[in-house]
Image 1 (cartoon, rainbow, N blue to C red):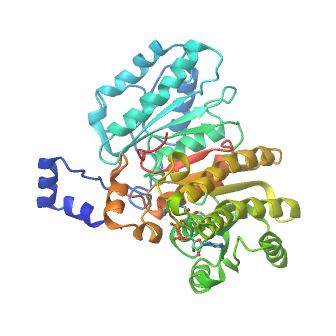
Image 2: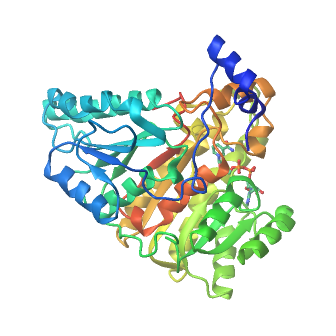
Image 3: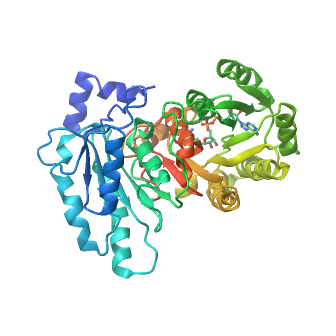
Length: 446
Ligand code: NAI
């Protein structure tokens, strides 16, 4: 799906005009179908710590074309900057500056990834260096070209760089599955996580529930999880029954018609699962609505349903699933849909932003509860995604909103779906209570 402006600037006359007057020229993003190979090589690993050696070794084992220097390469697919042992800000330059001369050799859709440790509020010089990585990374992401992205993996102290969870995060960020993720730092907080047995079907043998699955992002999540091997239970309101049945047929999934905000929805879901002997390994809480109005014109009939569907239903459903005791598998994964509006706020969306900021705090608390059983809870915060929800925006607002990110375009539902699928996988077991933004580095919030 390409918008009219993008089609125009990709034509010869449109491209020339855009170049002359300095208009945005969004690059074509390479997604999984364009670039199925998990890593774009050659991969240059910069840094001279034991962690850098270990990472280079693991990538070599996986068949990647790994180099330890950028000099002399005319094309570079991926660059890893291993910054795990920084003790002071002056140590950053010698590792990152070799990238400066290599930036012009980056291939379209290239990946630059920092591996570093979070500041801990303990050692001023070391924390300044660790915090500095974040500023460097977020600025570099603004400078990437041709659909390239720059992201960081923050590895908690005590977790080895070659832990499965770190390698899993790295593989996701190196792949074309993260096409619309840039300028983000993903924290791996535990050594949990396991390598995927079949990388082509990372969710094989797992059962996942997707709420709000009949259309838009939910339908795309369902298709992506199915392609990744999951067995699916698809839920939506009775009013969307026809679309839900059609998708369930296509994906050989079990449809459940249920309003997640209705009284007793959790118990009814548990009963429906028990009736069919279904045990969930992953729960994707995607159902969401907007009822935008400035607060000055806000009324309870716009406020209440947004809070009820977008956050209260998530709390109630997960409570019911956890309390039931027999409908969740070991190491369950919960992935919830937040929004960049919940991070930066948005005019006319006090209700929606309250619900979505609530989602991010909710997964953080839920992750602590689930950790005891090896489970995780995380959120994905989409920025501007081309769906029916955003198609209803006024034309000029929509056009501005879709350009306000480093990739100068709206994301596609599949971009959100890829992040959700990754967080449902065994590889993401070390990521807990995080919010992963899929927003092309939207210029709002952090
Ligand atoms: P959409 O409106 O196209 O689809 C939402 C689906 O949820 C529909 O199938 C709807 O029937 C279902 N649903 C709504 N209320 C329900 C209820 N009470 N019980 C069961 N199902 C219900 O929305 P879209 O764009 O696909 O959004 C999906 C999620 O992503 C939402 O949580 C939304 O807030 C979030 N999001 C979307 C963004 C975008 O740019 N489209 C940006 C940021 C977040």
